[in-house]
Length: 522
View: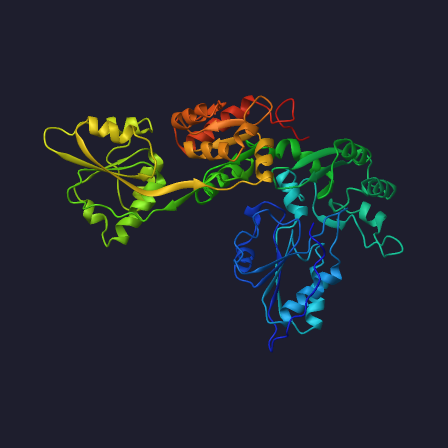
């Protein structure tokens, strides 16, 4: 963790800024509220904890000040007094502040104390509730905290009381007699003491208990046992914070209701090497299938802002990638033209992804080959015929020769316009090490493979002890072969859908790295 923030002098404003005490949820970015994301994107200062979702701050303003005031059980701590002082100082300087913390700010989040401090200083504040781990963690483990047949109520209890207290203020006999589910936060290290106190208070030693570590994220682990044995079970499994403990009959419903770990890519880490602008969609879908995703782009695209030739003489327009489709539309508008200038032109797209993006901009592809390669596209366009015909290629610089050569052989006059270029995205040593430790590395183009090789990451990724390489199709597979790498997975259909389907099929047959079989959480 970074060093403890030290306040620096800030001039006070005439009117203090508002402080937003924001709950960021238990870890799954999809559980963040719309209000939380809106505020993070607009405030001047963000004070954040460790246990917020990994992508929680991605939408923050480029000029926003981000301050790590993180706390993690058993680790380094930023004193609460320091955090509150920073809230006050920034607000009095007229800045808007988001205090972003995991879970809900008013459920064991010390948000109440921070709100009291702000009120005492005359600083306006708002509370933005978040999904609390005591509900979300069990839910992702297949455990409802209430149930008509098993638990008419739920009690949330801290497993880590204020160490300054001379003795526990928890009424253990009263808690043991509670007719419902008990959910303990932050109590992994005190699990033996918690179990003994509940049993001594009259809770059945045979009652089902579950401990959920890192709930709602791909690293989630769940162990179960009875109240009498759960401390030993958790210790043997190496369960660590952050975790919640669920005591009650509902813990016995896990086998019937588990769902999170049953997703097809759960327990797998997948490195995505495509350009950052296109990576988010693939990453989102992989996360939805249970994978932990490493966004490690090896490429980025750069517009060349090329000028299109006159379009009235173009018979065939061939677009070879979604990036080419985007750049084509931009070039049309930049030159003061629009889709009307393509009237009567055959539109050819190399694959369904390109055709889909063209359709989103009002262009329907006339030709989409069954095989998504330049050769197949040229063959699908067919011969030029007896009269002179012209083809315009809208694509990347340094693209392959198969398409223009095929069209020339078919009798076309070809204009090859480079609308964008692909350049390397630097990777640091940490990124290369993360790729090497992944279960899969995905390649969605030949350039992603080439640039990873240039960065020194392909040699680390390839091999029996490394991750399994996944190629989107034959062109990318051929590029990998030229680099001395053999992908273990190749999509049958050269699309993102095809790549995901191939990963799912392969994961069903191969265990996650470091395991002897499919990932299993008890």
